[in-house]
Length: 351
Image (cartoon, rainbow, N blue to C red; front, side, top):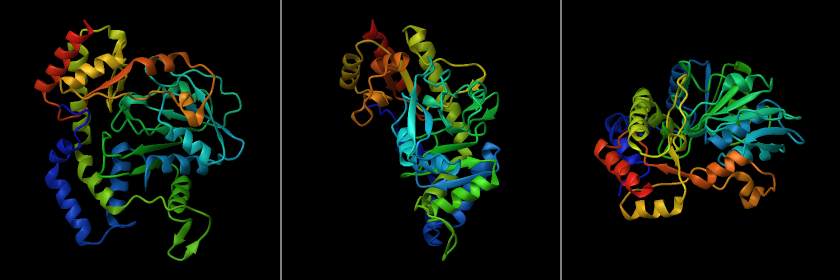
């Protein structure tokens, strides 16, 4: 079976570095807020070209802390794309605020909407394709970038995560830069913001026994930080290989180009997933599974079609994408032979 994502193959591509990092962390008992975490925070901030990185337990926690830090709370509204993972809405709700869902454009990203009384925007770089940050800046609202899909993605040679007031990354194992469990971070150029998030992630304390405010247990552990630090030097290589896979799909698949991911020449897409949009999706997915090709669906149903968030409001583009989307195998180690088999098989089926 050709997997949708091969985490083990990614591990094997940098096995020696990861094994050494794990052994070193265990030997030094460097598990909580130690040298391994600081090294990763410093290196990831340097990689992005931003001043501060704060490791947290997962991206949902990071989004929540980012919202809290800019004062989002009860009665506030935050713009959230309706076609993203529910974590973006959860983080808003946990602050006491309310997500106001908006539709996407043909790239899957938010673009034009009525800001109303919104106090902030969560800009999700969907599938690893950067949002139009220049357009979003015109709303003059605080922007939190959700870069969970977009490690290494760029707009005009500038990394995503460096355009908004803050940005959040996920290090879930399947991500472009993934650990061996949950993990995330918040990045910012503001020293005040970074210090606030460091306190909040660790029970609101500034020293072992001194707590200046209420906080949370949202720390990124040392083992995950060490693993991420071992993989970080290869991140650009991972993105380059994902783009090579995407290029072979784009030129090999004999389906309407409008049903493939739209690529803006001004950006570097990180291709966390490779979605195509097809009628008879379930039939095609079933046939592909019979032929040992894994697929998935990102993200369907949209948030407002989920029981916990049910709404009658219509989101035309997002609903159509959710109805037809199907994600193909996408990972740096996907062989040309396996990818050609996927392409040939899909071409036969869609005909």
